[in-house]
Image 1 (tube, rainbow, N blue to C red):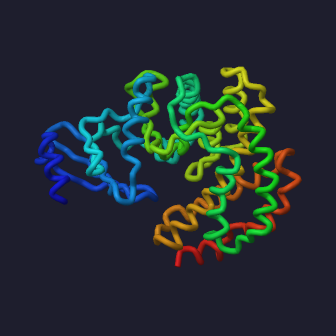
Image 2 (image 1 turned 180 degrees about the vertical axis):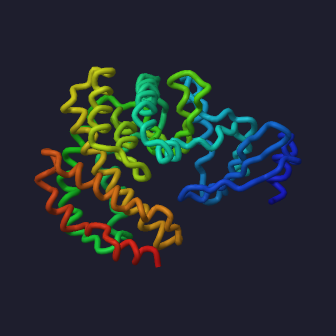
Image 3 (image 1 turned 90 degrees about the vertical axis):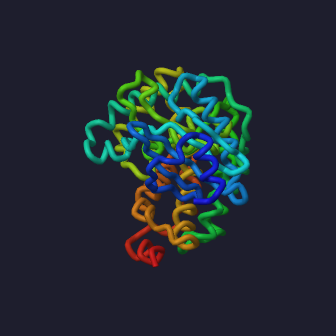
Length: 323
């Protein structure tokens, strides 16, 4: 532990707490669970020299809580040192609950739909609003890191995607938490709906189409979402928001194509550059979501270019990334 961490914990009254590491994500952030007597907390650590996300995390936390949803309470924070002491939501990740009992997925998603609608109805945050060009540029991670990616064909796909995405993004924007999926949701059964969804990892919040987080939930890299559950959730969302179902499906497909092409690049980069291979088993799922999106009539004219530019993640490709 650095002196800054020890001084921070001492000032917060947690310096004598027991400490245990918590597995992190693909970022450089680190997490510790602290325990004293019968109380726990989470210490978030990020190096401000390479990760300047803490101020955005703190702002978004306050915004979520001000809209009567569940983000961790902030007990203490030192932005200069990249430290924050947070409420501990526990270990009941929705990902784990679904794996243990797949039947719980549908009722839990019904509750999460209420969370999404409340986020949509909230006064938007003052955060970045990416353009269609910005979104498409972000997918170029795949060109550089995904094995066998062919930039010429992928650029042909992006040329079609950027125009359709531009049309989709003319919708009135709302705040998107951006990485809204089961692995970033801790289930809090003692709270009332829609606060039962404990939200995490939202420091990259943006302004964009209101269906972005719905799409992120329904094309979850780490959790299977059946076609029937996706379709039922889309229809339920449309009924509760008044969105036209066809325009909603178009938005989810187009946004999903962008997101999942980018995720393939992110997971491949994590393996090849950083040696982080834990997400490689998810590549076939992400690829299937991407190709499913490409079958939408708006994207179908460009789907051949996508398939030609991006090999399917077969066993050999995944083993190659794992080396």
